[in-house]
Length: 313
Image (cartoon, rainbow, N blue to C red):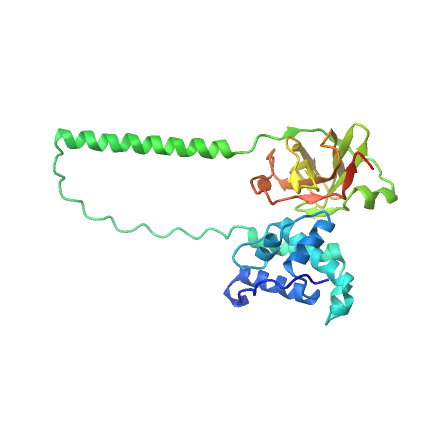
């Protein structure tokens, strides 16, 4: 199923720069996967537990904005899932030879390289000092009063702007303690967990399970390299409404001294609204921030576990 044809995409010249080339090659991947519509890619992302809208999938290859790592991963996974379901549409079946996780990692690494700030340029030499201005005419008392009023009003406007920006900041996450990892039976991994996926210096694997009193969410974290400061974030998402569940964001601060070390953040017990499907959502970042950088983006979902229904039917 390729979905209904959408509006024609604007052409992209890959020679215009790294962002244009990234979007251009994502378009090639989509065509190699059988040319699914953006509506179909959004549907596939929902099936994979990474629900993104049709417009988000379209914007990922617009060439005008760099997609988030989550959107990039969901786009690639959706393309490959569509390709496997529609082999008869493939002009070149070699796209199916790729390991999904390895291909997703490569695309996300490329995306993260584009997101890094460019090195600062050497400061230019200071310009020659301008000639001194002619003496200014002294203001009359009435003019001085007007100038002072404008300055005070400008100060009030600046303070109001800062207050508004502060009000939009998200609340701090609830800290949780990292626990030693415990083995999970193989037959439960596909049902309740996602499978480890790399986020910077660590791999994270969000998991969810049901209990009579609610759902339990956790995230297993494995170091890929030494990382002294890793902030891990964990929250509950309502897969039925495609919304975050309010007041469920938790933060776990970890430190790894070598590759291959593992810890588990959680579990956290949450009693959500009955009758919905839920996923555990997780993210990790280098640093100590208690709130993920993506949190102000309502479309950002983090890495999601498999979905469960609570209470179980």
